Image (tube, rainbow, N blue to C red; front, top):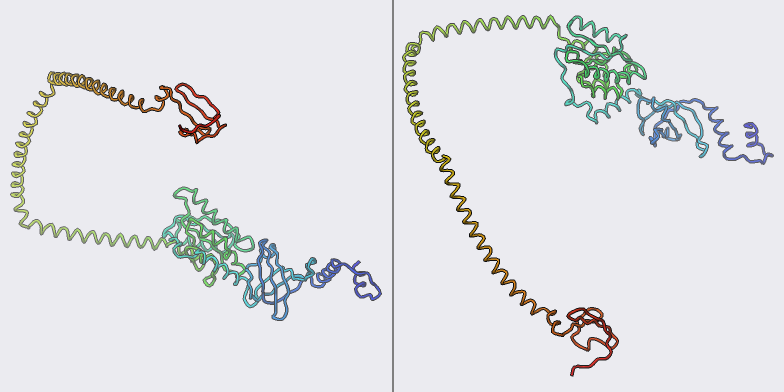
Amino acid sequence: MEESLLRSLFDEHERKPVTVSELNSEIKSLLESRFPSVWVEGEITNFHSAASGHWYFSLTDGDSFIKAACFRGQNARIRFRPENGHQVRVRGRVTTYEKQGVYQLIVDSLEPVGEGALAVAFEQIKTKLQQEGLFDEDLKRPIPPYPRKIGVVTSPKGAAVHDILTVLRRRARTVSVIVVPTLVQGDKAGGQIADAIRLANEYSADAGENEKIDVLIVGRGGGSAEDLWAFNEEQVARAIRGSQIPVISAVGHEVDFTIADFASDLRAATPSAAAELVAEREDVLESKIVGARTEMAKLVEYRLIRSRERLRASQSARVFHEFPQRLRDIRADIREGIRGSLDVLRRRLDRYSRLSKDLAHRLSPERLSANVEAKKNRLAALDRESLVLMRRSLAIAQEKLSVKAASLDALSPLSVLTRGFSLTRDAEGRILRDAAQVSPGDLVNVKLRRGSFDSKVVSIRPED
């Protein structure tokens, strides 16, 4: 089929055309078989990151352009984010987008030209986290000076854990160590390191007061930039910053810097240096304690000698000869004051006793009963007077009400109806005062003293 299609393209006697889809499919097969893998170097332009996660861009050498696409599954393994203007080296395959008949490069790998991809990725991650404030000095926690339990996040088979344990045995034999094992190299190492930091925090949070981890060392021995890359991953930096335990980073050698160094509370040049930072030498501490004890003994002896000298000088002072007489005088003054206070107290007690008797007389049952009876009589008299006044006021009010009611009844239009008069309204309810207000045939309502009736106007007679 493919050979027949090719022949049809160049056979002058063959007049049967091919479809556009068939032509694009043939071109795609030719391109993919001819360029299954190719390295292309150029500058990125028109870079676009789609919502699907795919990258679309063009490569140019200044004279020509080629479209390129890097799908989400591939760009997840690229350690830096491309930008317009980056000079890059791309490996991929050439194919066509059949619907539009456009050929493009499907990218499998991408790395910068002139500087390593790891260096570019390092700077991008560092800049991003720094702008978020993840490296601020205000977030740094102090490292405890004399920790009792140290956690170490590293490979249990690496040189780092051996160096740390060696230093701790030599300098602080009473410090206990918990090793949280993890990969420290490879694609999965970053996630395992972050999980190990969180695991150490969970253990410490659930442990008793004496079993909590005081400080956490996160690191590994030296290696290439590729080997140390796991400690540059964003997830490791965030796990360090989210740790409740103070963290010391100890990655590689003194010249090696990682993102973990910036995120941690303290950086150590090497794993051994980290162990030395957290473990003061016990013999040095013992020497300091002995020296402090000697200095304290000397200070106490010196103060005792000074105190004895001051005591001898005080014994010969004049105040000690005058002091007994002063005590006697003070004792006499106190006795006199006590006697005066007792006299005042007796006078006040006598006064309060008289007042109490008078009050008891006033509150005797006989006097209280007489007062109650008098009050009851007075209250009964007031009740009688109030009743008389109320009846008199009611009679006056009733008389006034009768007068007002008679006046209202005289003025009421209904009283006029009792004398044979009537009240006439038109169909809309308006009172008729003039025969000119109605016409023959109009309906009117006539109200009498008792009841009302409707009638029709037959004729109208003007006023005589």
